[in-house]
Length: 382
Image (cartoon, rainbow, N blue to C red; front, side):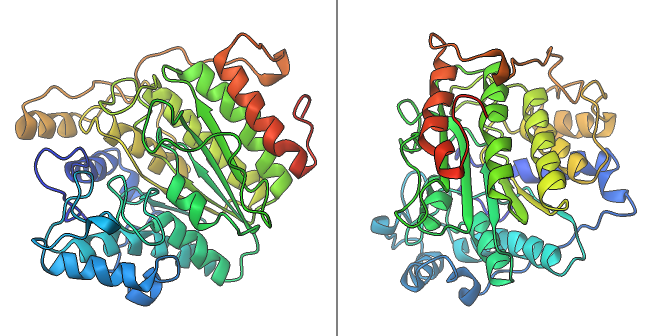
């Protein structure tokens, strides 16, 4: 899966997947009796075309075979998405991971599935965008729908708006897309505001919480708990698909949010609880963004794996010594000592009241006013 490689110096470093897998293994998560690690296949063109235009898939294949002939009109060969040999196969393998997750959840052989190599949420139906070639999360959602699932909730906690997934299902009332992200006023892709609520036949099924730059754990978690559980409960999905980009961390080089690994772990825990409460536990989790490759990504996604495995790792757990030694030997960098950031995690419940002078509260209220009434909820009290 590390073949998904845009080249040296690109923020989407493939080492983040290797480091995550090594840390999860060092924590013993892959050795649990009820956990199976499965190798994904390259998704077929027919599978990719369930959400992508056939001529786009053909274009990716052409550029993959000859990277000297980019197709910038489709986002292939740009600064964000440089062309490279084998691009199609590498991207389709990441997609294959999320399709495999959907297959296993559909046939009942897995209750939870994690593809931390996935989460390519910017890829649109007919073009690449924002480091994303094929939208594996959308493919998993579509696979579930085609397999007989009547409703799917897609929850995206990446610092960037999940625009590609939202737009693919813009007119589909069977899919609720919820994205909590840094406002498009300060961050790519510049979309994801409260008034983006879905197409005419699916109003209220696109939900966006555009958080101000600088939002930290307390504000982010207040916003999550003020919007997501209520809408998931009202929508009543049968499966949750989530995207856990960890670029919301305070040390991420590309974004302006201020979360800790502890806060990101709480978000994953919250999504898992929602799946348990409303979906009989059925939950597919993907990775996404995350550009502090050594200090943040492996810890955040190992927590995600641990939560999905039903064996949460306490944030005060020491990072395994063998993994820290590997990081030092390979990168010459001291790795974090603990699985958390040693912060005091707290947030104010929405029930304590709306503060019009607080930028996060204003954002939350804008979202609640835009979509809550469409689900039979009251934006002021629910």
